[in-house]
Image (cartoon, rainbow, N blue to C red; front, side, top):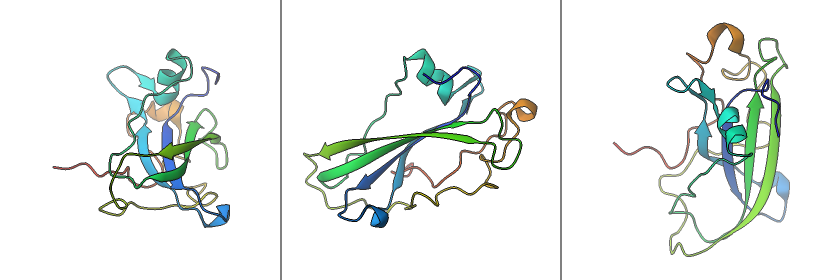
Length: 148
């Protein structure tokens, strides 16, 4: 379990499994930062739920083998460059029952390493001064896009 001092956002990505892991492209399917109403970060939500955060896999994903990557980002030292601490985990999934081709519209893909840079908003961040009020979650937009 992550220490209560290690507060910050969660980001969850999917990538179709490829023969060469270096060729895998990831797209974000979930993010949760700071909730001003509850004064809780995603890390608090996960800790309160014994390490669990419930998500829904998008329905329009092509059947196949995927890796799901979770990133918990601890911001306690993020006020200094290279101070943010990532806690990534991966799990294998076999997604079935879709009958769809792949994602429409196309998501924004990223690679790991490389999805985040040390000076990105949300990576270089003073949590103690801002207290989550203007926090911007790093990385690409979540797929599927919010429909108006």
